[in-house]
Length: 123
Image (cartoon, rainbow, N blue to C red; front, side, top):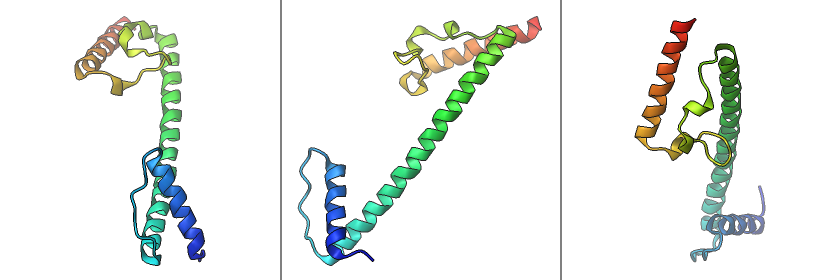
């Protein structure tokens, strides 16, 4: 088990990271509060790690889906990025669904569905 002083230092560093430029609220520094805050900081660290892993997994899946979409597009010539409204392609060149209204998302889905129907009738 870590010495109390070491845990106090870790808690102080964690609070500084969490609050950033804002002042850290005053709290009574004693073994009980240090222990509670230390366990909270450890849970927070583990949660941050898990969230990071999920984000990296989603990035990889998005990359794989984009690759599959490009392959499908090349094989069938049905879908192209030009069929997606220009407002959906941002500076990064990637589509971010969270940035769009419900109507924009539905519009894209209808266009994609219409293209897939026309592609399947052409083949």
